[in-house]
Amino acid sequence: MTLGIDVRNLTVRFGDVVAVDDVSFTLSGGKIYGLLGRNGSGKTTLLSLLAAFAPVRQGKVLVGGAEPFENSAVTEKVCLIRERSIAPDGTTVKDILNDARVFRPAWDEKYADRLLDMFQLPRKKTVSRLSRGQQSALGITVGLASRASVTIFDESYLGLDAPTRYDFYDELLRDYMEQPRTIIMSSHLIEEVGRLFEEVLILDRGRLVSHEETDTLLTAGAAVTGPAHLVDEVTQGLTVLSQQQLGGTKSTAVYGKISEDAQARARSAGLEIGSLGLQDLFVHLTREREEPT
Ligand SMILES: Nc1ncnc2c1ncn2[C@@H]1O[C@H](COP(=O)(O)OP(=O)(O)OP(=O)(O)O)[C@@H](O)[C@H]1O
Image (tube, rainbow, N blue to C red):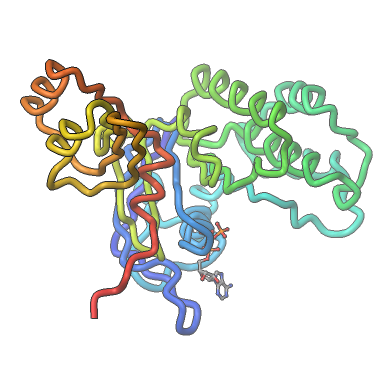
């Protein structure tokens, strides 16, 4: 089962800090969503409210059409995995899995066993004695095997080494294709995880600055390469993100749409026009700017 999510005019303040600033969006569900933002941009705060870790004080959060806070019919279908476990002292891997079996109605024991073997996690070890990577792997095991309608990984795979992270991405995709559900992943490792996302949301200092299908977002910028004077002509009026020049050949990365006409003319003049990576667009959309006075 997949669940949609509706967030309306959500604002979260911690004293003077506005962690989430009048954010609204709708996720139809049944997709893999990427939530991107720089440190402190409000990702964890927003995701915590989707998972009912705190009450909503300003605005509205609906998961499957219902408010999640203190609503077990919703919370049992939402699984939020954070980077580090907050299990009490003495809790073992086995205890965590036992709890998941009790509290997660769609829990798949065999799948959990398979993931534990894949990550080579010792079942009897206490969680506090696991390495950072092993704690991440345990979180991922719980997140995947819960088969929750809404599964959220809040940077929960950053502790894994690169080969294990790639194993996780492959496993996530494979399981998601078999059992579609709503998956939200927050991350800084944009180049790595970008290929998984069907839609991307970008937070910047608490504000939602972009929510697009990944393919659409990728057409929001371009890299134009060729004879310098032609590149300058085509990119005129667009926001230049970066430029490199070697002799008479220039490569300019721009944010903004180059019309189909201009692209056709540019190509026939010998220019190459390629798409920009998600990372470049992310950097552009979240770069520190001078506040207007
Ligand atoms: N419990 C809290 N008390 C006070 N301020 C908080 C609290 N939780 C978050 N904040 C502040 O709210 C802002 C958003 O924090 P949040 O953890 O949501 O960001 P984030 O995007 O998840 O960051 P990161 O990528 O660094 O984990 C930050 O300025 C943070 O200091």
